[in-house]
Image (cartoon, rainbow, N blue to C red; front, side, top):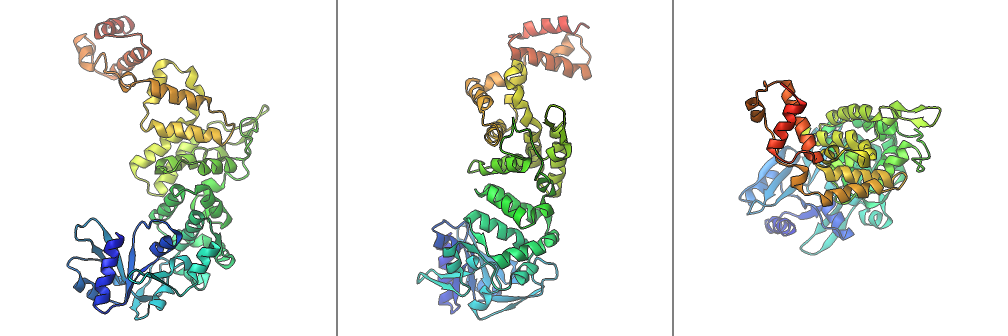
Amino acid sequence: MKAHAISIIRTLREAGYPSYLVGGCVRDVILGREPADYDVTTRATPEEVMSLFPETYAVGAQFGVVLVPSPDKALTVEVATFRRDEGYSDGRRPDSVIYSQDAREDVERRDFTINGLLLDPLNNEVLDYVGGRRDIEARILRTIGDPERRFTEDKLRLLRAVRFAARFGYEIEPATFSAIRKLAPQIHQVSRERVADELNKMLTEGRARQAFELLDATHLLPEVLPEISAMKGVAQPPQYHPEGDVWQHTLLLLENLPQPCSLTQAWGALLHDVGKPPTFRVAPDRIRFDGHVEVGVKMAEEICRRLRFSNADAEQVLALIQQHMRFGDLQRMKESTLKKFLRLPKIEEHIEQHRLDCLASHGDLTLYEFARKRMAETPPEVLRPSPLVAGGDLIVQGYTPGPRFKEILTAVEDAQLDGRLQSREQALAWVRQEFPL
């Protein structure tokens, strides 16, 4: 993609239009990271850009943005015209844009100094009009210009500030930090999909604990995830949770998330104990959270709905919450129950979550090792053997289709998984004995 972006800049320059790489790609190059994508800023208007390239997509032309695909269509680079923005009545996007002849003016409308650098790739020269290089060296996240103005223009920047600071391990500059705290309640102007997108990135970019500590410190956490904020100060029985309250326990899970980490694994870790705060009680023997799994599943279902999760992702997150306490019974399960547990969809995520849960509390990995050992020792055909009996077999034997069919077939499967039935003939004889007509 870098070569494609450079070729775009070369074409624009040859046509007489000053052009540069801009934004996160320049920051990442300076940090020695591989940019995920490359953006170009230029004095050329969208019409002039489109006239220079054989194929373009004017998906954001009203904001001066044109997409230019590579000849093989494998890569696409965003090319934006130098501009200044006028009005942000919706708190997200400018009401209008005014094209500019000056790259400096374009940079000054952007969000953070570390994202406000320009790079001339033809001469390998960085242009810094906003002190971005200084802040990268000092490991500071700072808005370009007045913080309140920058955040008022686009409320999503409140979350982006937290995400960037966490990802790079930067301190948020005091005035920027104060502005986030002041404007945190206005995050609700941002669509839930965009909020979810930022939270997803925080959870999977490698520094989830730092991100959520910053969400808490900036007062954004109770706005975007009040159910997580409610974990603070909720004590746990010290004999099982020497690490502290539910909040500290959850932060430890986030700290130990594997990398790379799936979205559902991360959300499962975050939400696995979300039902504890509303079920907290002090019993004569110890602190208890009766029914916290069932309550947590209902709460997580609402969170997934609120943040517009896909059905598949929501289903897996809820399953991780629903199943996480069953590991305590693993060694006492009947063989059939254990095998059915080990064939849960994405069972590796369940086992990994149990590991994270243990490391964030008592540290005993006995059941984790047991689950790993059984998974390694049990071939797929043993976990999911071909059924010995089907519905058609029951009809031939004289059974009438109905609710009893499921009961019989489930009982046969359990006996098969337990090793008590090995053949179709044996199974049919067993059915006639256990479920007489």
